[in-house]
Length: 88
Image (spheres, helix red, strand yellow):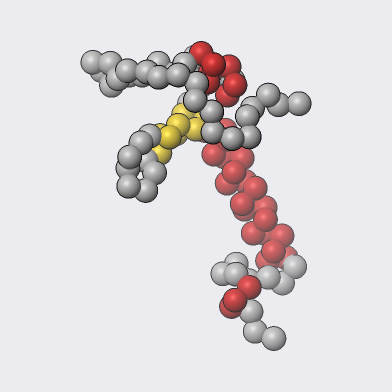
């Protein structure tokens, strides 16, 4: 079973270095299984008050799940625009 928390978790702080680099706290690296060489996606949330990092693999899994759900909905006769566009 995964030991990833299901809610926001404060795991430490960091400082931006001269070259724009940050060190991700060890607890966050452990929970997320981040290793040297892992590729991350950098996202700016609406309002750009922070930075979010996600493993490329996690983003790909989310996209794959979204596409699978969309394909299943279309295969069942659903409309990719949502139920409000269906005509009976």
